[in-house]
Length: 104
View 1 (tube, rainbow, N blue to C red):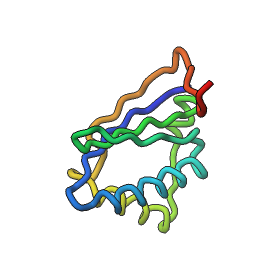
View 2 (cartoon, rainbow, N blue to C red):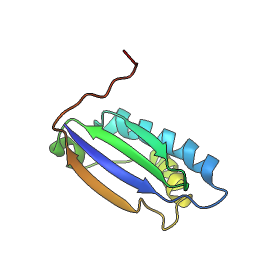
View 3 (cartoon, one colour):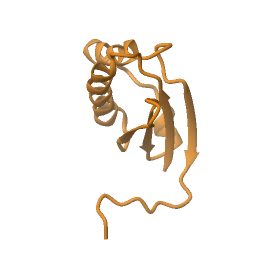
């Protein structure tokens, strides 16, 4: 399993549009391209950080064919970003996975 770390700088006033399009884009990637989903976080200064999991490097790097409708959703997300794309991407190998969905 691998994790991908993405940082998004959202244009002022575009936060709601970004959040809606990010949710839809993430669902498209999960449904069509084999991701294991993602979590989106917001720093106090307003920068958004997403952590996505993939079952393997091969699945993450596999060719993705986006339909025209799905591309329009992704482009709506990118239109809300300063620079039009995530600012930095990091690929992380999972060495220990203790994340839970509920407290003990």
